[in-house]
Image (cartoon, rainbow, N blue to C red):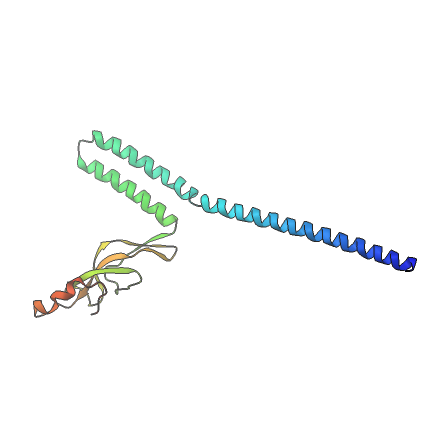
Length: 174
């Protein structure tokens, strides 16, 4: 083997070793970055509710103050007023966090937003629409948190016995 070939081979071998070292360092950097991202994601998930919980603390403080004030209150109206103020504060907080109330009464029954517990025979509300709401439903940033618990309107029957078994239906079919 000639001297030039040996030098070329040694040079190529050094370059291959350097490339291998760079690759190993890059892989180590990549693995460290991946581990760091996983840890940051876990921390973010673990602490995701921190700001919401901090926003709830003043509501809790006001409940505590209200309970103390109610112990010495001489009239029920002041207790009701205090509870209404706290409820309003809580509703504002929920709205600011992206929670919307589903206002169902009078709207067409929607199985994606409403849970029907029965029917109401009435002429006052159009058939297939929500006649009464027993429990509020909620959306969070457009996504259903809890359906509204509702009763659906239907036309009164001339024969009360003909609809007796439909009173407990959970998905209304007008």
